[in-house]
Image: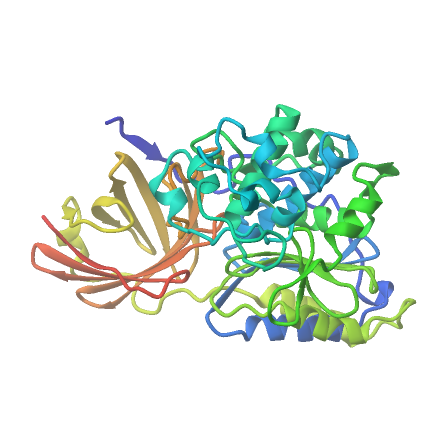
Length: 491
């Protein structure tokens, strides 16, 4: 295997596409700074939650934003099901171009993928049914993990009466993505780049692709927070941008209108969730990726995070009651908010900068037992207030992670980050290297605490390494799954 070396860089290797939206102060746009502070307090107080970014817009202007260190505005972030809203926009573009109708039958687009016997239920399934997550197919999360051809086994599954029962399924969105590709001759990603992204100046973006060469649709969008904010503002403006109607107002209205009850008294639109009872809707991804569009308040809120207990209702509950139609008199709240925004920082591990053990570790490589991260071996180089952790994975990619003592140091690497998605050929289509911010502390002579934040993805690993002679025992706590992997290494 070819060995690749990830070189430590102090900044992103690609041009940062940020600060393009206009900025303003909360009071100038009719919102007390204290209300923004209250929103942030509420978000950061949610248990089992790592906030990566928050952006608040009113009247098209960013009035507050926060990226807790070591996260940065320019870092992209995987979006999980927040991606679905973008697919809905692509479907709308095709409808506007008279290439589709929501009443079109799904089966007619895939004559080469249909089972030998097409049931009446499958034959009656429409694009509208897919948009509202009522295909009649029982969700099968394992299908994309065991097959490289997803369309045929999906269309071969039993179908109950479509359009009746809400059953949330990312493969419904995958079918929509495949349909758009069939009628336009372009992937959803390429179609959106041509029709929307170019006008919104969204360039630092990529999207996962299936083994079949189709934009995954229901997940996989890799994009910056400010680009999410642009998309939210675009929907708030009913499909208009810089005076151009890129997506019809009628379609945006359909996206943000309740078409089916999700079972809990909350409505679902065209690949968007009802966010409040006063007309707000949201794009919503696993672990709490949100674009909240609030037409009544003329607001957009974007959140990226890794939360195992997300609460999207906080946004409307905190902000909506405080919004005023005109500018407010400035007060001390703004200065207090600025201090709060600058204070957010992920804690680094406790412990000492060095251990008497580190000299004996230098030059030694520990071969690791099988583990879910694909790490093959690990070695260490101790500096003054810096530890270099060298990890080689099963693909032969060698990454020299620089971990800081009481500080975060960031390394860019082609090695893939941990990812909860279980799908064949995941990461296909994602461009660029990945950023890992690391910090460490020796909690005892033989115990190393290492924290790894994959700051342009979603995952974080809290790693404890205990050295005993020629062996190391490794325990990993993850922010995205409850299981705690334990594995060993030996010289």
